[in-house]
Amino acid sequence: QVRLVESGGGLVQPGGSLRLSCLANGTFDSIITMGWYRQAPGKQRELVGTISGDSKTNLADSVKDRFTISRDSAKNTIYLQMNNLNAQDTAVFYCYAALIQQTRVIAYWGQGTQVTVSS
Image (cartoon, rainbow, N blue to C red; front, side, top):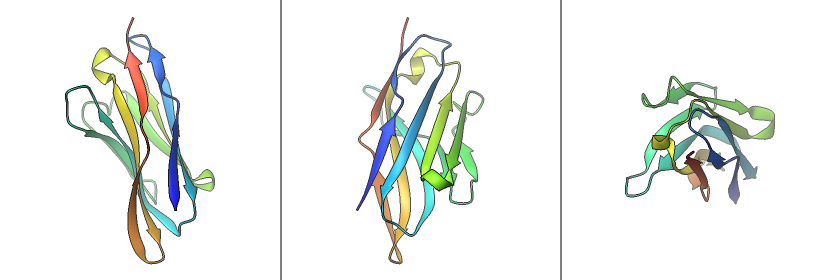
């Protein structure tokens, strides 16, 4: 069993920065991809960005000029650096992972971390 442990959310002023972390804690063979989704109040969950097992990244157009996604393979952890945040970034951010366990691909979600951008 794998648990995704998220951290780094909170309250930040417009124009500020936050860094989210997500640790894939447990036993698995390899990472296919990990990433972040977000869900604002009253809206559907949307993709923010992903990073593959070989570190290829993909970011949504709405954030690619402000956010970066990276990983520390040794720690099974990914990071989402968010800069120049605005009110439209307020959402619950969810970590996602597609992992290989004993030849099967298993998808996991974190419990979510709240990001609030407000003055």
